[in-house]
Length: 494
Image (cartoon, rainbow, N blue to C red):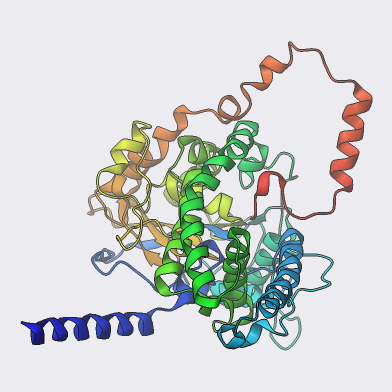
């Protein structure tokens, strides 16, 4: 009996150590995960559809997040504060005559890699490469769509006015049209990238134009803090014992952020990330994913209902492509791809509007606008992972196919998430859906909601209240323009 217990203990320790060795922290950084670390992680239990012979892709809708970016100015300041506090912790340990053998070697001379940086949030060189390579792969995968001479009406590229998103659009376009022009050794060509004003972009920045949503998000902050507190308290206590440091919850939060930035931007996993065990990383990742679920995903129907303008834009482009195909219009005279570049706050709600990453019968529940349960806590398995749903450069592609007349339907929609087919619960959990079913079952049920009613209905009430003086409104407007912090209000980090 004793021998059996020893053997069981040995097997447990062995399996745990193997799991730790197989654990790659770069795949568990929620929405700070780099695209290359997770783009080929797929659900092996799902078998993609075989595209019927004779079916040809005729149109592509792309909704992509910007690539890997640097920390925002707010986070740069947080990292500088962390560097100062680490020095204080080491000095405190010395004064308490504690052994410094437990102190991680990198602590002693660590300075923030972004120390003195005046700006933040811009597209990183790794982000440029992500989008450039994505553009090349998209062209190679769909030669029938990208076989026309470039024209901005055939291949419109749309982006938000945030520099990291527009830079991502440019990097993608350079890959997509590389070798197609006469500029430089790479034979690049010029192409147009268009955007709407930040104040009125309800297609790609619907979240920023929706006052109801901004109020909701701000009011959710206490809920986040309450949800995260026990996890941070538990991990703070564990690290304090492990390193004999008087860590605070803020320290742990900042060190977790540093871990994510070092892994994504600097390919460093043996500093901040090494402070945490795989179990602790999984818990910290879960808290990030829960926050994303609550304010970007299925946690509230407003999160994805407000994306109706984008969904209508997608459906319109498909309908126009079908009309062009039916009318046998001359190639080059109609749009073949609509390519959009935005943010996690765009990609996540859009994924939800398609019903992706749901558990079991949850699709029926969201159709009834019933609240969904929070994604299960580790070690339980969950579909909802920020690193998969919306990593840097994460994307959804909706490919419209024209099929032979003898098929069950002439037009089909295939959905690719991060370039891989993904099941749609609203279409029998297939990735290849008859266009009419896609339209009737998945898309149009959302159209019962009007964007202005959802987002600005309560503003009508304010019209009956005394108006603030025009002068004070002008001052507020000037201060908003003058603010140079690139982090939007209410802690939104795109």
